Image (cartoon, rainbow, N blue to C red; front, side, top):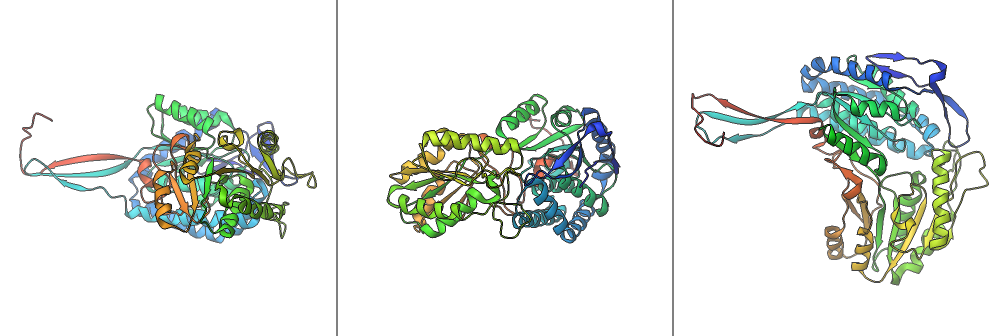
Length: 486
């Protein structure tokens, strides 16, 4: 599982001093090596993408879509290889890894179809003999900076609309998950994308900063922490570059007093503990009405205790490790904070029976204050805080009382109450009687407040972020413009 940079249609090796080990978070096994590239390498990739842009943007959009459909077929063929690589280097259990790969395939397929949907509109002109319409043009080189928690889905759901719109791309993946990005580049090469259209540069902060700063990079799409995303957004604003940032989450599930508690508990456990809580859409707060809180907590606690942590490729394992020791230590530090703020029901700390990997215990806190640290700060681990409330209004206030606003869920059997809650929740997405996580290729994905900057990802308009709208007037009748407004 050795990774290499892919620049201008060629694979590049670095000196041993410029590489690092890629290790498994489940047991510390060295999986391979990965480049630790500097800004100079990133500049080479940007120049290659810049040189490739005129030819790629001049390629008819349906032809660009054909290459993406070809990539879909390769991804389908290599799905198991990609899933196992994902499980090994990120730590997702193999079933979750397969699910991520299938979701990525569906999105590339949907985006490929956009090659025939890059439509503008026509409108009557106020001038006689004039035809008015809009069209879309690609930016040029687009920079993509992606995280480790969905290292297949997120790069592909950024790359696909960028490419179909006619941009060339430079991807800077997370250093924790380099091999999945290496495989994506390998499959793009096999699909037949021209040299320089797709480029992948591994490393940490230095190449990412170079990607943002370079004048040839005309737009930036980032997914990662809120702290870093705000810096990315601010710098792009200074440089007058279009920017799209998908950042943190602190997602609530609201359990009303008429909810089906069995279904709500299962959904909560899936959202809180699935993928080791390492999802921006993870359920981190359960806001529960007092009348059903005791029964609900008991059901979720039983599900948390039944989780079996272990190596992601081992049969029967239902939760993998944190992606790194640093991430595990962050999660454990928050369980220490929670023990001082609330009642610890299940878990806390590290799973000591698994000393080789980075395994935080699935953790459930009860009687959590809506303003406490574990209820307001993103932990990004398998930690759930139960906040008890007396009324629906109090539940909505608690749900909205954080800086984040990605997704939410409400469990109720009353459709009128559901619609009332939907309208009042400050999140970009809301699920009713379903877990907080999830999303579909043809639906927009994104949040509000400190979760999202710029237009939504995925969905029917995802390609528009990667394009500039141009308005055209064609005077075909010899009319003169006489309006003082022009």
